[in-house]
Each structure stands twice: as structure tokens, then as C-alpha cells.
Image 1 (cartoon, helix red, strand yellow):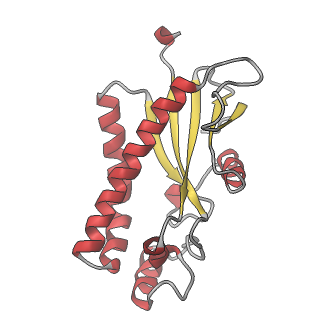
Image 2 (image 1 turned 90 degrees about the vertical axis):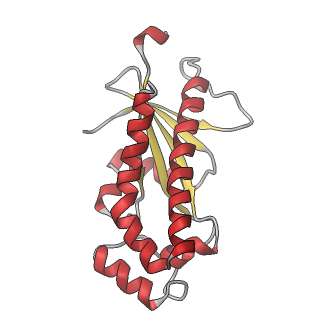
Length: 194
């Protein structure tokens, strides 16, 4: 499914989240999207941390390949049961799995996120009440580099496991602070909420 964007709003903590074009208030969308993306990142991060501390990095690579998508779907189902009209997914230009490959429009936003630390909201052109919120995912610490860093950062065992599972892997060569990708929260506003 291809979306075209009517508007792009860069979300800044210093500015009200309002479109310069129409005066539309994006604050409620931002709040819902931040809660959803934070929930996903904390859930995934917590599970990954358990794998790293109870096993080793090779096991963590196995875990990510087998469970990251399942956990994302579980979060989506939980939010749906709570009545949230949101759908989450993770994307990266340098994706490890083709499932996380962005559309061309999403890739343009990811390139923009490399230059700004802020989140971005887009309004989907063909769907008047549908928005996409992009929460940047950054390489935060040394632990991230053990699977996503340079050849010097990643042990031979982990490199071998990554190559076995992801022969087309693009998700290495990062430094701390680099943009790894984004969580995209697609939000459809209820018509009653107008």
C-alpha cells in the first residue's frame, strides 16, 4: 500500500504541534503516538535485555530474528484491544530483515530524521484522517554496537550468526548516536472524535 503525504510536521518539544498550513492541532496525535511507540520500544528493549543478560549475544540475535516481529504484533493487538486506532512497525534504510524495509516515502522521512533529532508527523494524502508518526531509533550505547557496529565492534561469532540468519544484512557500521531507523505509528482518527 502506497501513501502520499499532504503535510509533514516536525515535532519539537519547544513548539506547539500545529500545522503551518491549516492550523490543524497535531498534539493529540503526537501524544497517542508517543505512548504507543514508547510502549513498543520498552517492551522490545526489555525482552532483548533479558536475552543478553541471561544468555549471550548469539542467543540475542536468534531471539531478535524469531521474536521481534511477534512482540510488535502482540503490542499492536494489545493496543487494539484497548481501543487504540494505531498500528506500529519498525523500519530502517539499513534494514536487517526485509520486513523492516521502508517504502520510498518512508525512506525520505528517515533521511530527514538523520538531520533532525525530532519526531515527524505526516498526514496521509489519500486518507484524510490517517497520520504517520515517526519516532527515531538511535544507536544509544556500546551494547547496540555489539550487533550493529563496525567489524571491530561485532565478535566473529555474532557476525557469523547474523550472516546465517540475515544473508542480506545492511544493519551494521553504526556509531553511537547514529539513526538506526524509526518506529512508525499509523493513526486513524475516529470520525466521532472531531
